[in-house]
Image (cartoon, rainbow, N blue to C red):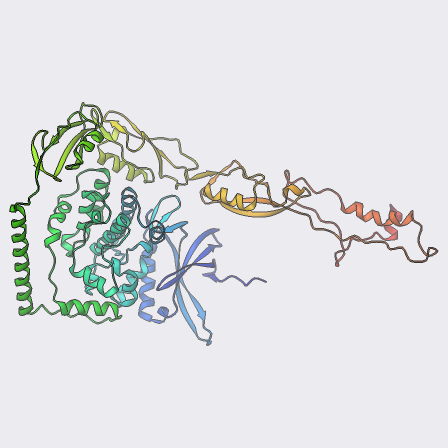
Length: 634
């Protein structure tokens, strides 16, 4: 007998455990009143004993419920449940009822794939920043942006979660430099959090920059033990992502480094600014001047932090100390020593650089080949033995992909391994179509506008695309496709996903094969038994009521699987040894066959109705034999 399910708030049925974090457990759940799946986050009982934490948790849960945005996991309800402990005591444990998201966290995706493409990284980050822009406008700072708190649905949508709890934890006074927070999130900790300072919206943007770095490269900007990570966040400059992943563009390098500036005033000042530069870098458009400047200043903008202060901050972070960090200014002797060391190091670097540049071993000069008129591939192949090649695209009347200019010019001399910039035609008055599949409509329009497409030439088709696996309203296709050249006077048509999937024909498949086919169609299986007298149908799909119909992505599809009818025991008449006592051979079979014939009436065809029949039987399972009165009435 199954245990009675736990019900919260008189309506939320608590299901299986689907996730466990440092502060709460997450269960799959069911809203019995509205008939929808939900996720239920239940706070750990040890945290629920803190009265001040309970008070702030209630307030923050209510604030989170007011965040209504497509890129934020919706909070439906919150409450408290009285839990009886083994010792007999009771404790009120808060819970939050949230939208159930069918997908994976970025942490799971990164664990499987290590990194994602630059285009996908930008798309995901734009969703995260849209969520932060909205939450910041409502006065809510997330404080714990990390891959584990970002989900990507099976349809490609980006969802940020875990808003309220992080805020409540910070308000109690257990700052983000407590061990519980740092151990899990030290890789994404802002310098101000690492030093125990107050936080604001720009704190979230630093953490988002750490996430973008990891999406592009497969590793966080800083790695090491928690204490070491705190040191690095406070006083070390990150390397550009392209150092670890050569395909990252200079523009994306600049965007990431600007987001990771140590001082809050030196970072992006809003999620909207950050998002605009991510979009520009993704589309190959110019980024903001502030971000461009970050690549120049990052190498020499290292903040000098007195070692005792840094050590105190790191120790407080790793040892779960809630004490205030030492705020003393560095002593004059230490500051003077560091200043002298910095000047000496700079002088040494400049001196070595001067000697290197003017030494007899300076790079030899070679003649630059003339490649104007070649295709870009031909030109790059010609120049690559002696030079690095940079591609610059412009609209021109020359044929698409033709080199129309080069710098340095052909016939001039340049240092071996120096850079040659090739200006390549994209064709007459055309733009390159960016990849907008997987974007929301407004994001797709913004990307096209940034790429140079006229707004009047962006068309949204009324025809929705089925069977894409994408959520409704997400762009499933563009015409022309990504990478194609689009004339500035030509239209581009965007097709949205309907969010619908076609139930496939599963007849004859095994239950396992049917489940796999439904999974590929972005559906799930709900299998039921169907009694059949045909051996070839046993264990196979015999009936799917919704076959060929359009249903919502993620829907459960009822599938009837063939099952053998249960065998029924039949009474057997045994001849006694004495022939004189035996009944006549003609009468015995007639009596025993009557119930047999009545129990063998055919069951309905499985192709017409998912039902079954069973023979009359006694409590011990044997077939009933008609009484004499029944026999005589016949």
